[in-house]
Structures are given as C-alpha cells and as structure tokens.
Length: 303
Image (cartoon, rainbow, N blue to C red; front, side, top):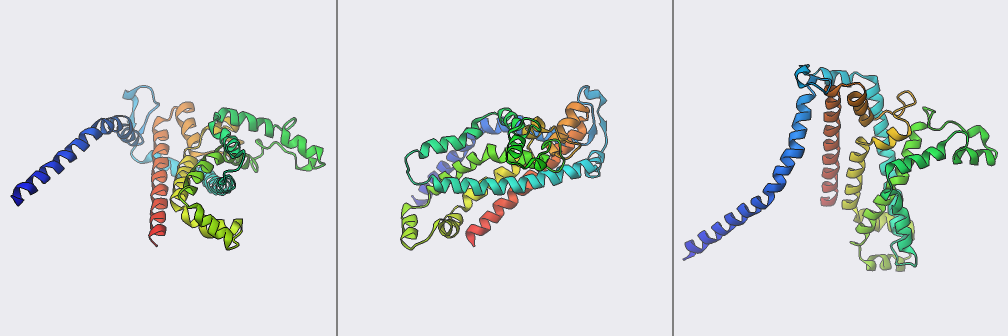
C-alpha cells in the first residue's frame, strides 16, 4: 500500500514537471528563435569581415576584429566615457530617487501630483529630452548661457556640447534628468516593504531625516539597490540615443560610447563583423557586471 501511494505521488510529480515544461515550451521556442539564435549569430559574425550586404563576401578573420577593437584608441576613450557615465549617473540617480521617494512617502496632499511630475521625463521620448537640452545648451540663445550672462558670469559661458571638457557632462546631466523618476518609482515600491511603525519608532527616538535614511532605510533596501544598479549599469553600457542626438560622439571622439562606435561601424562604415565584435564585448561586460552586483547583494544580505 505504501509503495503504491509512493508510486502514484512520483507519477504525479513527473506529470506536473512535464506540464510545467510544456507551458514553458512556447516561451523557450520564442527565446531560442529571437534571442539565442541572434546571439550565436552575432558571436559567429564577429570572427568575419563583412560589409553587411552579400553573404558570399564574408571572409573569416579569426580574432582580428577583437584585436582591432582592443588596440583602437577610440575604443579606449569609449570605455572610459561609459565608465564615467555609469558611475556618475547610477550614483546620482540612486541618491536623488531615494530622497524623492522618502519625501513623497507620507500621504501628503499633492504627493501624487509630484510623483507624476518627476516621472514625466521617463515617459517622454529621448528625442524630446535631447531637443530640450539642446535648447538649454545652445551657445548664443540657450537658457544656460543667457542666465550666466544675466548674472554677470559671462566668462563661464561656452559651447557646452562643442567643448570636449563639458560635452560628456552635459550628456550625463540629460540622462540624470530623464531617468531619476524611474529610480524614484523603484524606491517608492521598496519603501512599502518597510513598516510605518519602524519610521514612527525612529521619530519617537528623535532620529532625523538623514539618520533614518542611513540607519534604517538604506540597509533595508538592498534588493532595490541591486535592481537599480544592475539596470543602470546595463543601461549605461548600451546608451546610444541621447549621445547620438546631442553630440553624435563628438566633438572629436570626446563623447564616443561603445554603442555609437557600433552604429558608426555598421551603418556608416559597412563593417558588420567589427560591429558584431563590439556587440559581443558589450554583452560580455553587461553580464559580468550584473552577475558581480547580484553576488555582492547576495553576500550582503546573508552577512
């Protein structure tokens, strides 16, 4: 009797497992077709020289595309730019997003309006954001230079997007403006996991805003921090639209990013193989950074 029940239970588990895989099968087929096939194709293409038009013109180059990439000074500039961009944007957006979320956490009158207001840039097209900041940075009639002239600081005016020393920082400012609202939403969701009683107890104990954030809020939101950091790092590595719309990688190569290099290689120079190599390196660093951050968060929570 015991053996019969055990056998029936085993068959039920097997049937549930098979049913689960059958439900997953359509998704696995779609991922295999549109994701993994494309990934393997790009990896294969990265070992060839090809103009992207006639398949019969593909010539095997081995690792030469990768050697070209890692010895290209423009590629080094792009990696430094994306590293600076990543560190600054992720850090500032995390800080501002958390501060805004904490300030809007109480159910104050008008808090919904301010949440929507801070989220508007996220919902806008990047083209709209870029055009807005182009007007802000315009050297003759732009808001920034006009304001500086009006307050007697004309010596600080410059062609913001045309100066190699400021162009990257102008792009960083535009990105922070656009995506801080998204981090705010993540932190608002994360704050709902902290009981209101914890905040009330901290207030009774005399803890101020910064003390509450440092001792209670920040340690309690490690999973939210991980989500924000991983999405920010991966987003930074693949950043293209705001850079291309504002500077197209210039002046010179001062704002060159891996994604702009990829576009120029494939769309402008017909170097599909070289562009594929850039894509593979971008994917590799995205995966490595994401895994490192997830492992760090796991150890932090366990420790």
